[in-house]
Length: 193
Image (cartoon, rainbow, N blue to C red; front, side):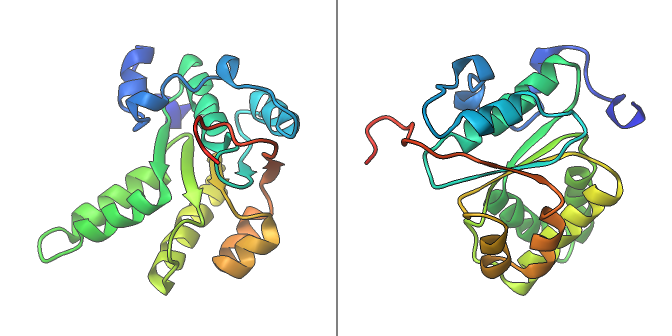
């Protein structure tokens, strides 16, 4: 597709440019432990239509980020350009780029993110949502919906109602069109609990 045409042909280079942290690059579907409470999310993510937007939701440590990154790694193998960004880092990066001489830089950064062919927004809900943060999230999600750009979101919010109450009704309304996949079961992180 035209939006994907600038993706490098080398999968290693696409991975390097994706923003996926090095320790996360092994988070592929084949390494996901299918424990009770995770099957629906695993199958939904594995078989996700490349044009589909999804929300992986559940409490911490259940494998949401692993499944989201596995979707990105699958897309990289298919030749697509992808981007991983934790929501809190994205908002901090936008703020840090504002200033006397950097307003264009903040806008350019935001425009680059919103136009990515596949974007993973990790940990939606882990931020204090000021009116500015709500406006930025709403603008990002709204643009991606209008342009039919798939988005993967991970959140510890417990469903669409929690998003509306904790973040904002406008963002929740847009996310209601996404496929919601619950990630439950046991904590997958070693030495937790």
